Length: 312
Image (cartoon, rainbow, N blue to C red; front, top):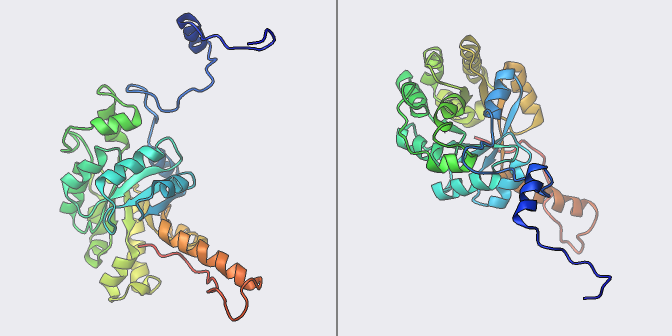
């Protein structure tokens, strides 16, 4: 090597230690080891407590890249475990790929079974969403599934959750009891009629209305969400939420829908799914090519039709 060339000298152990102590490291890891939690509180629970609007992006695909894109924009990743083929292993990979980003991972499980809730919490879910929570007994089972004794009866085995979020044995259990969210879905006529008793159940963190199934249950058609009988049931749920200081949520596929539901008292919204947003984006792009005259000789693209994305 020529005398004018520079070559770095490997630092000795002492200089590395001084660099760490003086904060001179080029990169300070955001995700560290056990005993250094990534979160002080669940930000979704904190936002709802303040009355802020929370928007969830729905994950129907198994693509980690798609999940990362959505996690940088939404407050919640609604990982769809009821209506899709997403496995527990993929759910775990989504949680690991997106931790430290804006969105918190919530998982909708297929039913109100305790073992279903336990498995997603034990791999790092920050909230569990229970469908068809139509009775007080189901609501109590859901709430207790999300809490360790004495508040509930969640079984002990959170090694992977601790690993994902930087907790250890001394910090995880109390933190989980205070921060993991129990979300129950009101989506049947008799659930709406009984919502006051359901909302009185200790340990519920969010009342969510499955508007399509509620409309099916009340009118026999999912398209009647805006009709008086369904709106009346939704208002009853919001009233129960206000009475017991529980925030309320519902699906919303557009800003216009969200604004109307916000005015009714909702603060949590399930936004469009990854597939729907990709379809709309592709359609919009191809429509713009048709509008610009790119397609000729009788060839043309299907023009984009803007409408609220499908959510359930």
